[in-house]
Image: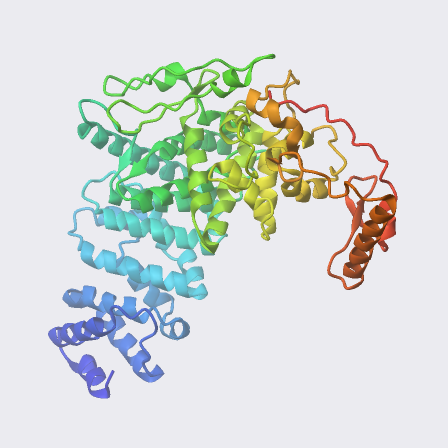
Length: 591
């Protein structure tokens, strides 16, 4: 910016300021890096803009001045120099963030929401880019103002964009300033108000869905429009920050009440969707993140009894009839596999319902669908996005027996075709088996642990569904390479095996290491003399010894603790080969 422009801004009238700043804004609007002003020019420009914003008589320039600040605030290096508590207080007031007493005095005043929105955008940039401004916003009127306006979110006159940026600013403050989280929870009753916003959004979207339903049939419980989805996603992120430090294993009475109410709403959000697929994905992602913070004993609330699930009023679609028989001792694989049924409605709206053991499992199906979508996502970004849903699935199946049994039938149905390796294919089981050998330790551990719990921590059953090669990492870390110890979890008693006829026919020809059927092949040692066999064996020993000495491989043997222990010599591998495989007393496929 030239010296002459700065001087004209300092000496010109309101019209000159607006015109020159609009030219500045047009030039740098789409540039999200610092504009590169010299420090003295930058300071003078801030002085001019803040002078106008502090002058109530120059209100016609406020929106343009704030737009210029929004661009200038992208320069992190200058904020400590140009923003102090007084200047920040001016922007906070222009955003309408004032204490409750002052807000009541302003009730009959005309509000220029264009100015409010620009001030909110400026505050978001400033808080995001400066730690000192974050601290100042925790002690000025920013937080009281946000919580005061939060109470007015039912007001139809309050624009959506104002609500959205309020939530965005509250998310940034709760993310960067952990000290204000207890204050928001207790003093301002933040959890109560935020949960009410979710509840209101659900009810509003539900009413709109009913209005637009086809012949009284609602395609899904809730269909959010774009604005509703944006607001709900921001509220979920704020709630995550506020609930994060609650001890979910021993919440107090008030926290327990909030979580109980919240998990019911989260179930509805799992069943909800948006017109934009990307926003649906964000909605379910934020819902999964928050579910992770819920007390494990509350996951039962994700399930509704069928009478309760079907009592949705005259406009709700009847839940189609499904098979509800629960497998019992001696049940065949066909009966076990029929314990759940996908239901596709006759008008092809793809509404799915599922009953298992008298419960509506639709929310669990949604979680499995979300897991499947994350498993399908390519690239490194999918690895990070897989962690929350995999962690949640592990916790859910550990905490709730009904959910575990249902998920096992979905993820590990009775084996029929074993012509391919367990990691080959497009099912959830195939993709999880692939992750069991991932170089990413957390993903490898979570996927293996998930499948192990579904197998009731039975080593034999895990090997059956994944192959010993895929399961070796988990078994080694748990000291189970020689077989299964007693499961650490609480599982139902064993009943007879329920393998399919197809699997029974080829059971003896399934390679336990690869987990697939391999037809009989002639022995490579057939026709050799004993001397030739010994010669080949020594060649193999020499190759292994050479690889070991060159630190290419590290041979191990299984110790008494069931874990691999390195050996110094290949010849040591001969020791302990007589150890018998301990029997696994939790070997069947029933629950």
